[in-house]
Length: 256
Ligand code: NDP
Image (tube, rainbow, N blue to C red):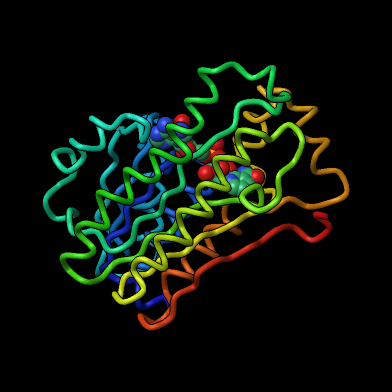
């Protein structure tokens, strides 16, 4: 029942494109307030405009408050300063969507440069952990809240060329599972969404901009869209308070 989202405040990392952007707009449509975080301020501003339009279209009176904050989740100082950049009225967050993540290339392990290895862990794992720590402290104080992490099928199934990325997503899987168990005697919920192939900027970034290589992966199937995953996230968030969707593994028909 999506009415459970009305008036809730959602914080989304990586809200400037793909899954994060679609999720922000869908929450806006459902009457939630949204804090949008990412590094690209211009892209964030466009998504925030779409949120305003979606909320208006919904005709709902509640919700509809949006803030875009330029933030790099791999920068601990920026995370520590986050609340100084969020308007007071949006500081009481109900749902955290840890979505920021990337992989820049699918080379074999000896060919990936060390800096990229560190950047991937700093964003996909350490950034997600830092954001969770920040929010879970508040969730524990007020005895409510929901952490939704973007894992991946790569968090369960390793593959050649994915050594570092799959390691980061296995870490997200382990972290989400432990967090869920740690919070088991509280009303705080933890969900891990594990998508298969979703066509977003990610699809091209992971082949270092090679559009043909990116297209080839989708031969014989129709990839998911950011909207498909946004619907899973919003669905999990809108379950009754006693229902915790622990994991959602979702991939396109025909993905092996
Ligand atoms: P996109 O590339 O479209 O989106 C990634 C988002 O993460 C962007 O908004 C980007 O914004 C943000 N981001 C990246 N690095 C940082 C950082 N250091 N700090 C803050 N924000 C950052 O890809 P998707 O929407 O596909 O990916 C979203 C999540 O879904 C990722 O965690 C990805 O691993 C996961 N996923 C994707 C799949 C797919 O096939 N597409 C499959 C399974 C999981 P900006 O550059 O403005 O900072």
